[in-house]
Amino acid sequence: MFHIVFDSQGAELLNTAMDMDEALDGEILTIQEDYSVGPIQDIFSETGLEERKKWWNSIRGEEGGADTPSSDGSLLKNILSRMEEEEFDQIWIWMAPNARDVSGYFWLVGQLAVFSGRIFIISLNNLPFINEKGNIFYPNSLGEIPAREFVKAKKLARPISPAEFETDPDEWLRLASENKNLRLLEGGKKIIQHPEDYYDSALLSFLPPAFQKISRTAHQFLAKSPEKINEFFLRGRLKRFIDTGAAEQQGDMIRLPLKTADEVSG
View 1 (tube, rainbow, N blue to C red):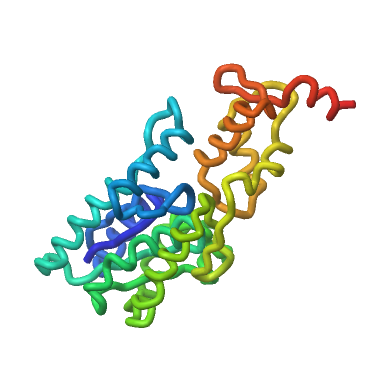
View 2: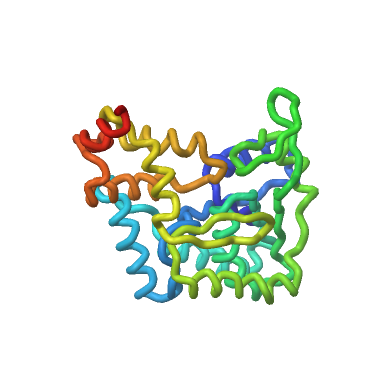
């Protein structure tokens, strides 16, 4: 079988789990792009792909380009070809309750409809697992689950229903038509969208009066946030503050403008 995941750390743990249970044996494929952020209009066209690449370049800047939907598209094309040749009988999609996994699922599912009956999903939404200390917890990502728990999780695999293949691709069309660049999970498979500046006021409160690394500021915000938000997206917003004068930059560090910092301390 193919295993499709949206989490590289989860892929490593799943690979470890295969050594514990041969029933899990298969080829693991990781969707590299984070479809919870950025433009997705016309993403299945060259124009849409180019717009998304430009957006990622504006976010990441000198840190280099991100994995793009074109690379995911090539990966998926290979999967479909091998499924048509019946080299693999099934695809198992592992989906944790976070915006990245669910957005990736909506991007993916419509492209797999031709193999209805051979596509399975393992949804971890509201499901308890046992951590390394023996305590029950509810994971937000595949990478949080101990490898041994994958052996239990395989029992959750179920075929994606014909009804889901009919309605879930429409969710992707809805998201694309709304033309917003930030997607959050509200619960289950419900994705809501917001403009890019949705977290700006909260993010500004994490700017220190003394210079500190942009990455550290993003990490501090993520540590306090209940949502799993793309770190590069947050760094892009912090750099936007620099462009607008809401923050000052020194190398890879950021701080409140001195006048603003004095007002805060006063």
